[in-house]
Length: 216
Image 1 (cartoon, rainbow, N blue to C red):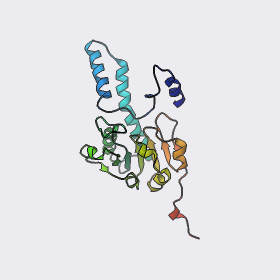
Image 2 (spheres, helix red, strand yellow):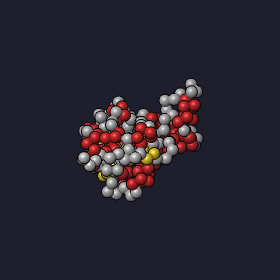
Image 3 (cartoon, rainbow, N blue to C red):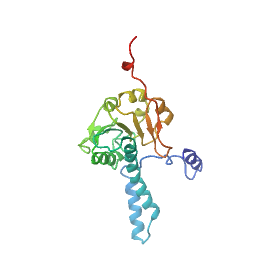
Image 4 (cartoon, one colour):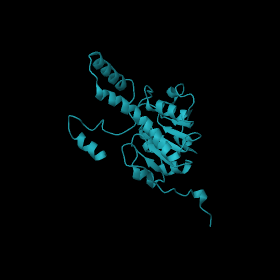
């Protein structure tokens, strides 16, 4: 899929900027504009099937992400899931129509415990996610969790030590909603990795913690 997207992006009329697979768009403008255009078409008696599909797929991507978690963990009740990123995109604290709101709500409805971190949006997110445990330190948040979900592709997350991430998690499962990491990079760190629009799970070999190695 990535090769197909790269080929399409070579066409200057299309460009490469919006061809990355992910868990859908959010924010105050794009979704509102799509809905307004659909309504305008409807007022003119035109059934805009393409825009209907855009909106349906945008919501389906978030459900698919939760499905990826259930595929590996089974029933999510009682499991702890960490969300890396809350704002609808990097570089802002804007939570309007953010994917994190939908994902957190679905996880809570499944009976999971949800933790979350964002480099700048934590304070804005707190009143919106009252049943979510919001952390200021991403590594502390990841301690003992059953899965981590990359929701917002902040550059800070690309700098995380994935080996350490795998070590502190109860179950070393990373679902990468923005394809920020490469499958090989995650697997080499000992993580089971699921991206979006990529082949199935890549399973890394768990590393032994130094405290588990018998002393001579």
